Length: 241
View 1: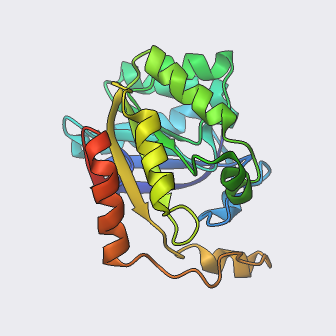
View 2: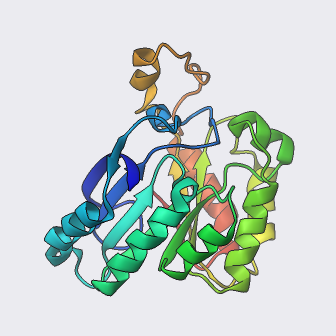
């Protein structure tokens, strides 16, 4: 059984093609800009069978085409790696593409098995600087870099994702550090620059939690263009989502 928070059908921003996105419950990060703070607790969501999710995916398979499939996001999916491995194995048996959206904080035998059935990893990089990463997430980025190295060593197809937060993660030196660190990772197909937004802000109010980036504005077109120009030389493909 998987503890599932919610679903999105026909998603276009979470991997290749049209996708069924499964948001699972539980995360050890507590990102300042988290759009899904209601997925952080491991106690929420609904226990759901692997069969139910596979049947849901099969019912939408006609829309996936040659590129689409199922993406598991969160929360942090690797906290439920053992069950997810069963799900991805079943999806692969049905000829359905699989994507894992992860912060890379967890690595164990269960995660390694899960990666065997994963077509593409969407790896979220919060910040390159250890102190800034801990400020943003509450945790170190050391495990994320180890996770990225494992993906490189095993040539697992990877898309990097980076949220561009004004004043927090958009400094030129931070972006150059990101590019320099990952420029020789041949398994990385693209980098996605994710503009900062406050679409999940209302959830904090419902949960009686303070939204810590209250005064941070959305990105300007100039900021997004600058980030693109800095990062574009380092990667095969850079996209602003």
